[in-house]
Image (cartoon, rainbow, N blue to C red; front, side, top):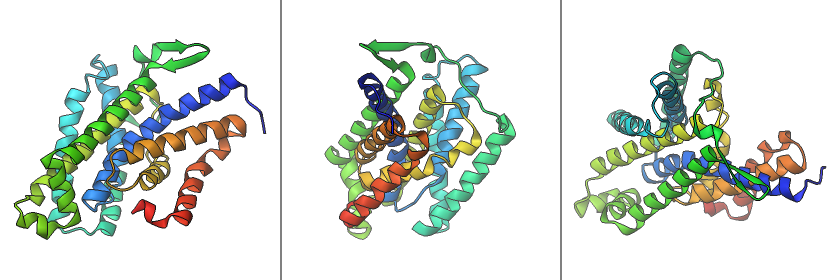
Length: 286
């Protein structure tokens, strides 16, 4: 075991917060889909990487600013999310079967990405990646700061909508007791389509953040599933701020573990935390 310097430890904590913000942003749509729609949507991860590759394509080939690609990606993914939910609803897919169906959608999207962009690693070269802010001895990469800003801002915005507006209260009521909500005039189908579109749009936003900060490969879709699932379950289903907080805890713990021991120990962190919570407070993830 190595004893890192205070500077290395502080930089590791910052890196963990940056990564955790992306975990939270990726987990937000999954948490809402699982908690409010009772759909375990694995295609959320594939959509995020599709968004990352679209950002790469629009920026590298057409010269668009990566953040401006959100103007195209968000509405496109909203439509994709609405279409996927309509398909699942049309065939009355159960929550467990939604896991299987959306895994198939994930495989299809991965194959599509490989067909268009091949399996080679891709890295978006942007002006954002060239800039770093300095806070004493610590460095703050601009792409990661953008991820933190988007993750925190969107999570709080969704929390405000769900907790303080009539629309959010209607969504929560439909999730808790659909027949009673319908009796009070709540259009569950319309709200579900809207929420599904929002979840897919959130995946697109996460994809832009992935493109800004990470080297991309289609096979990496599956590498994110486990840790984001842990963040979602630790944060609580249907809770907008939960995945962000849990993701930051996991990210910081992973980063400190890598600094103190070795990178090979980092993947054990998220699942160890999840098992501890399940053992101590089994009702926490429901």
